[in-house]
Length: 164
Image (tube, rainbow, N blue to C red):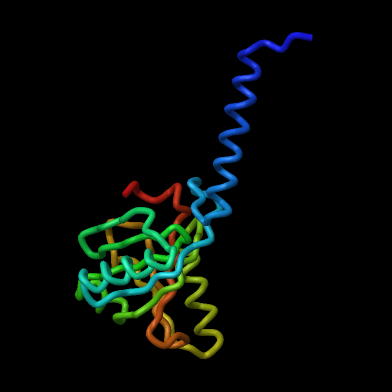
């Protein structure tokens, strides 16, 4: 039985692509935007501090994937979804100058943040929703005293965010 050369080449290329993708996943560098588990965000007090932290993380195997800089925030997004940012003082003050944030994925960030704030209030905590902290990105913050120095943020899936 003779197998056409183009089928052998096609199967070989598919196998090579799958093997490469599997290798990248095992190394923690999934090139695809799936799955999007949200993010853990840590704030640096200056652009130099952000650069130093990103460089230090790279020395320990956690490399920068890309940057998403907006007028209010400089961001380095790492391969595991961790974000190291440096917000402008006015933007940071608007959300209480948090040192960290838990980013959650939501189809409707405004509704999800309102529901989260209502939930926290029902548990006896203070909570407020901030929708205009970063007008260039569809990110909504929940500022609450249930955290010490941290906030929640809700955003759309990465494939629905503006391109960096």
